[in-house]
Picture 1 (cartoon, rainbow, N blue to C red):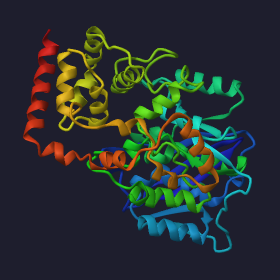
Picture 2 (tube, rainbow, N blue to C red; picture 1 turned 90 degrees about the vertical axis):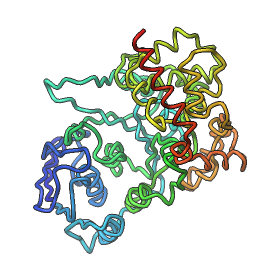
Picture 3 (cartoon, rainbow, N blue to C red; picture 1 turned 90 degrees about the horizontal axis):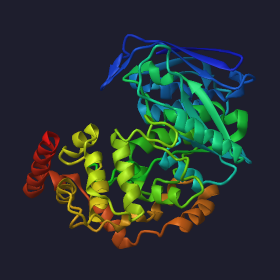
Picture 4 (cartoon, rainbow, N blue to C red; picture 1 turned 180 degrees about the horizontal axis):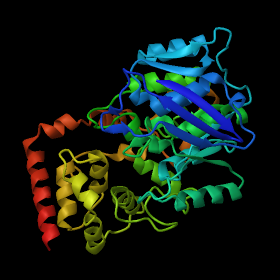
Length: 432
């Protein structure tokens, strides 16, 4: 793919031209546009960023659709070229043999790719106060019909800024480069931080990636994140441009990230739902279903049958929970393990997910080996912060977590019967 850049008064435009061997469609995503825009500070120019970092930004935008080669208007360092080829078996050109790779700034700042949600808010709590926050502010094309709402995230950014935090809201339409709308690569959420890395002086990038995602808990089996392709590709490419991953919540579950936020000063502004209003989540999406049950469970509040019935009416929840195994199976095992009521669907979900037999106390604790995913400069601070909110997993806890396997579920006739019974009960529930 051939790439061109234009920048005027901080407005950076990318233009893409596909080569014959490139692909328009990859898996379920189609590249429907050939240009995208990022709105940066008015005094930002192409010279404000190291060429290798700009190359990485470009890669994150078009990677799924590029088959063999990316041609840029500027040269990258030999170090970056070689690492990209090693990590992807693809090539990026031209090479500027006199260009030195970007080094980590000696007095740099940590960056957080901030979404406004619970997991990234927990990351904020654990990071040093000098952390710079970067919110990727989706530009929605005029006339586009969407359920997506930004008001809650904007409110959180404004509130954090007023409290003295350094927050950058960077507008871009890069998510509309593909259909369905979304990030071409998950870590493309860090593009605002990458583009401002030299403008500000950043030394790492943090994400709100919890343990279920990082270590693929029961999806289908535990995998050491440091050995996963995701880290070996993207983690290494970020590292080679002097912006290593700073995965502060990678050893913490969705249960525990919410516990951290509830016990922090930011509970009132953290909102994971992207369809609701400020202080008023939509309560009609799977994320709301999940987060609400986690919140009630952590607060040890009794969940009445009427409230549960309203939650189970959420179509997306019915869809995902009826799968075998259920989506977020082990998380719902934890939630139902704490449930002692008589709601039929909740108790069937407990049976289906083994919430009645599994020891899931590890969900409330920190997986300490994840410290290796944090740059040495920040390990001591983050570890101390985590200790204020969570205990560390014991070897017994770690074994319980690592032993969870989707294959054990799939191969169990008893659990399949429970799953079928749950699906049947959902259909009957909808007929009432």
